[in-house]
Image: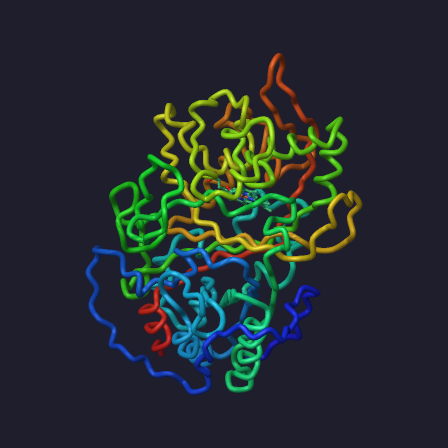
Amino acid sequence: MNSPTPASPQSPSRTTGATGATEPTEPTEPTEPTEPIEPIEPTGPLEIDDIQGGALYERPSPYVGTYLLLQIHEPADGRELIRRLLPLLEPGPASTEPRSGAWLTVAFTYEGLTVLGVPQESLDSFAPEFRQGMAARAAELGDVGASSPEHWEKPLGTRDVHIALAALAPDAADLESVVARARRAQEEIPGVEVIWRQDCYQLPTGRTSFGFKDGIGQPAVEGVGTPTTRRGEPPIKAGEFILGYPDETGGLAPMPTPEVLGRNGTYIVFRKLHTRVAAYRQYLRDKARTREEEALLGAKMVGRWQSGAPLVLSPDEDDPELGSDPGRNNDFGYTSDLRGFKCPAGAHARRANPRDSLDHEMSVDVRLHRMIRRGTSYGPMLPEGVLEDDGEDRGIIFVFAGAHLKRQFEFVKTQWLNDGIFIGAPAEKDPLVGATDGSGAFTIPQHPIRRRLPDVPPFVVTRGGEYCFAPGLRALRWLAELT
Ligand code: HEM
């Protein structure tokens, strides 16, 4: 593989601290597939051992990580890379000492599958949105103006992106050693080139650049063993996230063919989202009379306080103990607050997952629009209290995994975040991440009269992204054997 020098200023530095990780297998020799491809039953218990772990399971915290995008110049080398990656991929829950030193996830764009030699009939069986690619979906997704593909960081959104590789490691030393081994392998696979690299890491605060704890509201998935965090909410059917199993409709999600390729795979949405933290802080400062009010307005926009404490459970002030308690911080619904006096209907988290607040709407089944998010932060923190932009690129690498690109990611983005019809405020968009042009408002219900924050500027700019497909391990072996 050829690799550019990592350009990111956030490259993890090599530290000397020993990690105790077991010596990973050196991926120097081409690995022959060890197991024959066996016939597969169409449905049955979840084949955890065949599903890439990154989709179903949180990685331990803290972590550092790297996203790599690769271009395949020589199909045989692309298949060789898959063969070498296979022994390094771990299905199931994240082990504390990842096999290769890092938890790896590998996914392919439509172009990537094409270059690898996947037959046309099979390519045609993938979801239409995946085949089109994210850049072609820009108008629908609200990636316009500064967020439009013409301004995206190259090569994001181009036909050059074939493989996406995510490597998350417990610490910088582990990650660097994995990256170093990948570099050594470069000479041996010249037909695959690393064309983009983005490092990411958990901020020292453990929160996102806007200052909020993230990654709390995640669905429990049936048969996976992840704990339910909201009492009374049954786990979501595995087929909502992994192809080949019944989903919430009782049917199977349309699955790419042949079955060996589709089954146990999942679609991945990958987006680099730049956060305009100074503009966000300045806006709140302008609209609030006190620091307390500033924190409250920020919380109203998100639906949670910075600590993660939900407004519904703690409407008047932050409750850090509640925010950090996984047994309580997601255990709520909105039926006690249908008018939004505690948490506005337009708040980001309430829009993105309205929970039980739409139960009266016969046409909307919230369970069909749940999302597994695996986001990570990139870029340096804007120091506390700074209101001036320092020109640094910071934000979130937003990662979604699911079986339905259109009715999960695209639905939530277009109908719930970029539109307000469903909450009776058609002109309003998500105040934190909505595709706004700066003329929109955000309404906060309160007594005696509601408060309306005008002219909410865009706080998030899309720097680029890709729709990918993360196959199961058996499917990866199938891809490696294509001729
Ligand atoms: C820079 C962009 C974004 C930031 C800073 C951000 C931040 C947050 C925060 C702070 C929360 C509350 C904590 C939690 O429940 O995990 C949250 C929840 C959530 N966000 Fe985002 N978000 C961003 C983009 C998006 C996008 C683009 C989507 C979907 C298309 C999305 C979907 C969700 C969902 C589904 C939840 C969980 C809601 C729940 O279950 O209560 N977010 N986000």
